[in-house]
Amino acid sequence: MDSFPEFLNDSSIHHHGSGAKVPLPWAGFLTLSLLMAVFSITAVVLNATVIFVTLRHKQLRQPLNYALVNLAVADMGITLTGSVPYVVTNAVGYYIMGRGGCVLEGFCVALFGITALCTVALIAVERLFVVCKPLGTITFQSKHAAGGLALSWLWSLIWNTPPLFGWGSYQLEGVGTSCGPDWQSRDFKNMSYIICYFSLCFAVPFVIIVVSYSWLLYTLRQVAKVGGCAAARAEAKVARMVVMMVLAFLVSWLPYATLALIVIFNPDVQLPVLVKVIPIYMAKSSTVYNPMIYIYMNKQFQRYAIPLLMCGKDPWPSEDDTSEALTVVSPMNNKITPE
Image 1: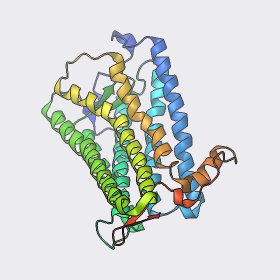
Image 2 (image 1 turned 90 degrees about the vertical axis):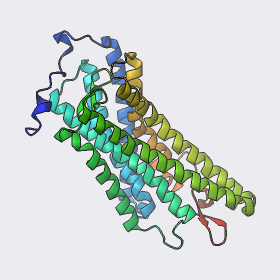
Image 3 (image 1 turned 30 degrees about the vertical axis):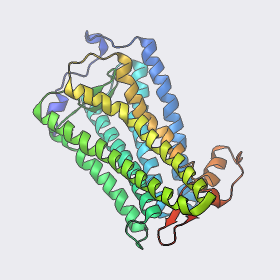
Image 4 (image 1 turned 60 degrees about the vertical axis):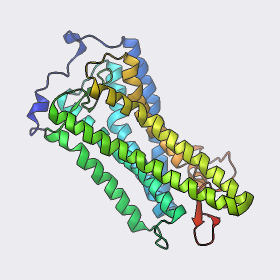
């Protein structure tokens, strides 16, 4: 950290007892700490389960599952570098890790967070390629999956490194117990960074998700018109899955992105404490329901993950593979076959 003296000299991180106005009573901080502790424990269990069953069962190590595992790794990173420290700092009532800790936390959480966002977009693109086959006979292989994952990490690293060298910065956010990109500074370097960051790391993944799933649903709708009741049922099942995925993205990141935009364009705005806190919680909560939606709706993972979580018991009997929600469409014969 010695190469970042401007961060170490920042005096904005201090004990509340130094005269700063405390944003919440102690009971409020304790409530936030307990809530995040529940989220953190759940996220660790779910994402660790995804990683463990994939490593243990060879049949799960397929190209289409690479992104799901990568998402679990990124979500685990967010939990360990952001959510767990958040539990501690809220229990204490102020940020205790100093300027260097703030920069490290902000960088790590942003790195894992944007990687997770890019992976969600990658999952949408993968499903588009498998279902709609926009490139014809080219099939989705391991090299394509590995390339997409490498790109998601590289893209996140490229756009989260600049604050370490003076273009943008990481500062306290919310009630002053966690750190993230500085949305408030009106400095030109910071403003230009934030605008690029928001456009390329939030807006682009969202557009990719919407376009990919819209294309996928349109293709399934066309196939359903000539495929009869079975095709219509498959389309409806995929549609429900897609709606959940898009809603999960919006619930996770739209409040945080909206708050960031409000602060960017009006840095002096006075917002209630809950308005500052809730978007941060919503963003961090994605580490819990990402694995629930993207993994446990996949019956192949269910077959191994549910018994592991339930200590060997499976309350849901395995269903025939034809009930799998995700389907593969062959544009040559307009038939729907289970993946």
